[in-house]
Amino acid sequence: MEQALWAEAQEASLLPVPYYHAVLTVPPTLHPFFRRAPALALDLLFEAVAETLLAVARRRLQARIGFTALLHTWTQKLLYHPHVHCIVPGGGLSEDGTRWIACRPGFFVPYGVLRKVFRGKLLSKLEAAHDQNAFGIAPPLGRHLLERAACQRWVVYAKPPLAGPQQVVRYVSRYTRKIALSNSRILDYDGKEVAFRWRDRAHGNRQKILRLSGPEFARRFVLHVLPAHFVRIRHYGLLSNRVRETALAHCRELVPGGDVAPPVRRHIDKEDRAAACLRLFGKDPTRCPACGQVRMQRLYEWVPSHQLRPIAVAGARAP
Image 1 (spheres, rainbow, N blue to C red):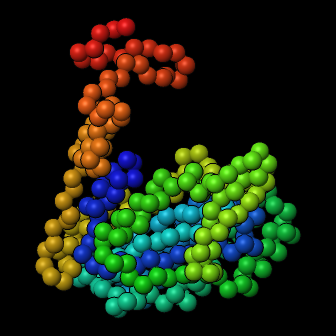
Image 2 (image 1 turned 90 degrees about the horizontal axis):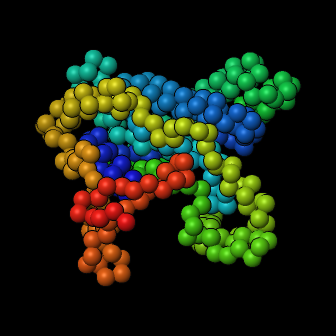
Image 3 (image 1 turned 120 degrees about the vertical axis):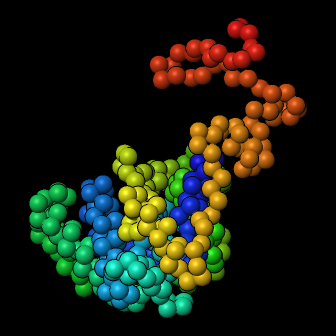
C-alpha cells in the first residue's frame, strides 16, 4: 500500500524526457568508516553523490539538473555494499533558465569523469571527518585506508536510458519499503542454519541457495538496519522539495514539443486506506476474507500501553 501510494505521488514529478540510471559505489576499503559511524558516513555519501552529479552536469552540459537518489547497502548474499542509485532526467535548465538543454541521445555525461569527481569528493569529506576523530578510528589506520582507496579504480555503473517515465516510478517505488531480505526468499531454518535464495548475477542471474549459521545470518541482516530516522530516498537540484513544483512547471514549458501537462495525480488527500486499497488493488480489506460478503467492523485497537480500549463504530453495539 505504502509503495503504491508513494508511486502515485511521484507521478507529478515526471518529465516527458528520457531518464538515466547511474550507480555510485563505495569501495570495500572505506567500509570501516561506514561501519563505525553509519549515520555520518552515509550522509557524507549522499552529499558527495549530489555534488558530483550537479557539478559534472553543470560543466559538461552547462545545465542545472535534478535527480532522485536511493541508498542500498546490501548484496544478494546480504554482504555490506553501500551504493547509491540515481535516477536522472536526460537534461536540465540553462544557467539563465531560458532553455531546456537535452543530453546526447543514449548518453548522459562521461562516467569516467563521474568516477574521478566522486572519488575526490567522498575522500575529502571522509578525510575531514576523520581528522576530527568522528569515526573513532586510529589516525594512522584511517589515513592508510583513505590512501588505499585513492589508488583504487572506483565503480560507477551506468545503465542505458530507462524505458519511459512510468518505468522510473516503478523502479524507484520498489525500494521505498524494501528491506535487505524478504520473507519469500527464506526457505528453511532447522534451528542451526538459515537457507535462502539468491541470484548469481555472474552466471546469468541464476537462482542459488545459500546456507548460513543463525548467528552469521543475523549479523549480516542487522548490517543493513539504518540509523533511526535516516532518509534513504532524497531529491536534489531541480527536484529538491523547496523548488520542485516551480522548477518542473518551468521545465515542461521549455521541453521541445510545447507545454506538457503533468501526469494526472489520482491520489486523494486524506483518503481512507481501505478505499485506497480498493481503488489500487481492487480488494476491499473491510470484507470478510472467508465469505467476501459481510463487512467487518473494527471494535478494538492495540495501544502502546498494551491495554485494549473500545472504538466507537457506527451501527455497532458495545460488547
